[in-house]
Image 1 (cartoon, rainbow, N blue to C red):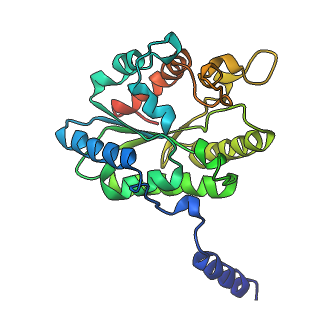
Image 2: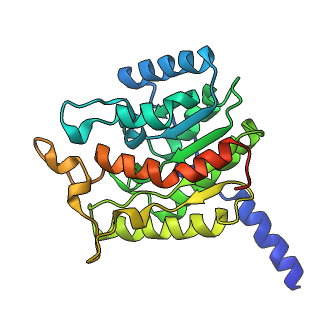
Amino acid sequence: MRRALAACLGVLLAAAPLPQAALPYSRMDLPWWRQRFAAKQAELRAGPVDLVWYGDSITQQFETDGPQPWMRFKPVWDRFYAPRHAVNLGFMGDATAHLLWRIEHGEADGIHPRLAIVLIGANNFGHLHWPAAPTLLGIETIVSTLRARLPGTRLLVLSVLPSIRSPWVDANTAEVNRALAARYGRGSEATFFDLTALFQKPSGGVDAADFIDPHLVPPDPPLHPTAQMQQRIAEAIEPVVSRLMQGGLP
């Protein structure tokens, strides 16, 4: 009886519809997004491509170079990633569903990078208000899709970065990161790197000075790391990036 009930439950779970966070969703109705997608397709085809960053505006900002010191991201990219034939596939405002659409529509086709870095999930907790469980499933779907489309590529999944938006965002960010560590901590499907501690103040909490958003006019809640913090992130993950790109163990 127990086996029969377990089998029935498995069938029901398998038939359950996936949440929006784990389903591909296009933003091609936005002209800037459509143009960036086409430009990045051309860049991927121009090759060679040994490293790919998949993400949202936090990744896209690597293409920004000032004029303020806290906006000088490009030197960080030029130092750590450009020499490795890297392509920046960060799109402002993208959630897991939008990244999944991009991957399924050309961003993993015809390329054979040594390493793909995934940093996604922050926008799930914004106006979409997708909580931890569907966000986690969205990230897992991205990883499994990349695993299938890029079988020879190592995957490095970064934690959803801390922000200063609301207690709800904080709780869901922590829940997703705990689940990612449990799922990928052994490095079989992907390597997981938790960057949370990098943002923690000695006295506890997150320092708003590590984000560009308070500098904006009008200011926004702290979400996007400064160029200085992006350099600290690059330095923190560099040993893992180097090892994975050289074919070392996760």
